[in-house]
Image 1 (spheres, helix red, strand yellow):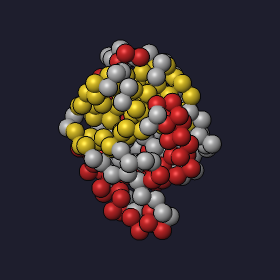
Image 2 (cartoon, rainbow, N blue to C red; image 1 turned 180 degrees about the vertical axis):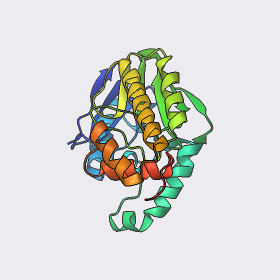
Image 3 (spheres, helix red, strand yellow; image 1 turned 120 degrees about the vertical axis):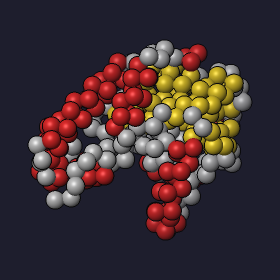
Amino acid sequence: MAEIVRVAGPVFAGPSADGGVNAGFVRTKLGALVIDAFLTREDGRDLAAVAESEAGRITATVYTHEHLDHVLGSTDFPAGGVIVSSGTARGLRRDLKRYGEELERQGLRPKLPTLIFDCRITLPWDPEVVVVELGGHAEGSTVVHVPGERVLFAGDLVFRGRPPFVGSMGPERWLAALRTLEGWDVETVIPGHGATGGRKVLTEQRVWLEDFLGRVSELRSAGTPLEKATTILAGEFGFEGRRVEGLRLGLQSRLGFGAD
């Protein structure tokens, strides 16, 4: 069962039943603003039940980006608005088209965007919520900030306890996003994956990414073949199992390594 708990004031968050991904909501006077929806219908239903219990109803959902592990759990959400950035909308259309037949077989029909914004939107919902697209991890990487509580839903711009998925990364945008967020007045950071922490987790992720990209640059400059670079980086930075394939994809499609 997904474990959704109070993080601060009207902000609730927690991991999926398997601990793999985070989601949450803000209890407002207009109802719950849900942030992400997990991967499975079961986890999504758990999230919706807590949100409705605390806030009376789900008024809208924000997806922090287009990756389906943050979206598919909305299949059984009640009718309501879905707020996404323009980058997230484009990426979601691509992914739903790519995986459409398989999702249909599984009965997964995530809620589709009803409001698409460019760059930034402020929701004066009491408490006020600010949603900003920064890009980096994915085309539409978006954060949700609750200024009055100094809480930040960082989405997959931050991973804790495991290396991030780098297969869709924009490296310079990701670094720029983290540097921007380090300048915000936040006290609590909810990562897309891993334990909630303080603002230092933003710096930890930036430093990890700088170290990773520095090593990538060294290997690329040395003419290291793709497969060898994948093996070296997996060992040095802790990529294991299926995450190695994401590493290989990122090296080939985003970081300048051609196929061997």
